[in-house]
Length: 195
Image (cartoon, helix red, strand yellow):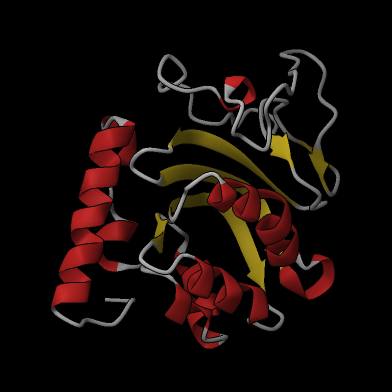
């Protein structure tokens, strides 16, 4: 896992550690010293630790005028033992929402497992975004199935084209516009979140 790096092609457009509104503003990184790990697996030092021992993320892009951000994740999302959603909501999401972010694109192809607990922080996040949304892109099928089994899918837009989107071929603005069009189409047609 130490060779899996966060997506870098947008670094010329946005760097979270240089963004004064980012929860990771001022953070310094090493290319050579591997200090983060998930269980006994070292993780590339460019990923951001946010308080979970099994889940790390990277803010790939944030646009405060348009009110959206793109977050990439790696590891195991574990609400059952570590309450990862509480830590994510309190330390990252609330900070970003305080700065005008209401639309969240979560990239999950590197999330290996999901373990659920209750849904109160998902519900809180959903209510807090008001006119915004949270979209899951390219999550593994068994992770999406667990979200559905625990009824957490009701808080996200997920599945269908969102799970097959070649997002790396797009710039952040084009990715946002593509996801927004898919979200709006589902809302207009009153489709369920998972299609």
